[in-house]
Image (cartoon, rainbow, N blue to C red; front, side, top):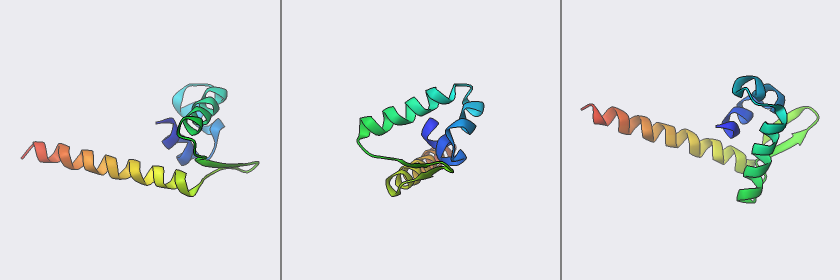
Length: 78
């Protein structure tokens, strides 16, 4: 969830307002995720954050998963 919010906002500081956690906590969550999977998900610059190609693929996977879950949910009502 934090990964998606950060990718959408393009900034750690903008996300803390949405999740009601400190900017440092947001940064730690993303750093921990990147360390755990061993892949850099964001390019960090003074202008903000942009997704790396791998980070973009993570967003695409998430979107496909949401579509799949939505399709399964709609199929249960039939």
